[in-house]
Length: 283
View 1 (tube, rainbow, N blue to C red):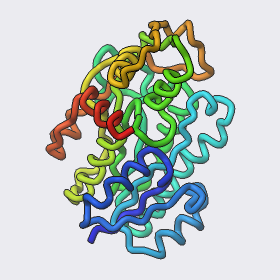
View 2 (view 1 turned 30 degrees about the vertical axis):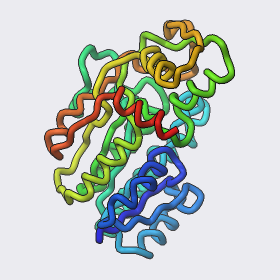
View 3 (view 1 turned 45 degrees about the vertical axis):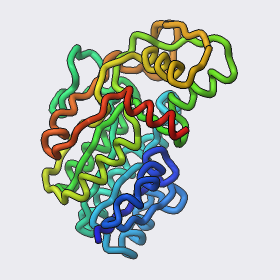
């Protein structure tokens, strides 16, 4: 039986992993909420690790409020950098493999082709900076790690673009969505399946990987398909980034090249439209 600790069980990815747990009877999970396990508290991490003989830790905990991070710099840094560093230190001490979730926001979006894991990072804001610092701390501290960068995460759980669009469709007659930011949506349940498959392979191909669903689209395209599938009559207008200013800058292009992960672990990656159908069906 593979012993796995999952942090931030109440977040999107944590809830997706919980929903899939029964499909993986060879894995014994210990799920911890952020209040049950504060990853910025070294003593509490060591108590949690000392109580079990974990093989893996999946770190789903993160400060993800991109705009708020511009003001709450210290809090974002504490969770995204210090928390990642402390988990890596405890994983090293207890011989645990760490699977850490990171983000496309480590890139500046100035590329015209999908980002490789080896491409130069250059975050545009505090969120991306703190997530990158977390990645670097893990890499320096622990050999047994997998960092998985993902993008545009959504699901039937938590707060995300899909659920926001469905809510707005029930409240408004018309909405504007940005059409000049390009990326790839990722169904969190697909990401959860990949993480669990990675654990079951017991691979030692450690390092940084990219995972998102297949396809390059804008937020406008994403919203359009959400409204089509949910049979919403809301009027959708395409706007530009300059028409919707935010405290944090977003990368204009953040498509991730997922071929390294697909080839290394022999994983077939679903197209974004197919995964969106599944998510909306679940809702």
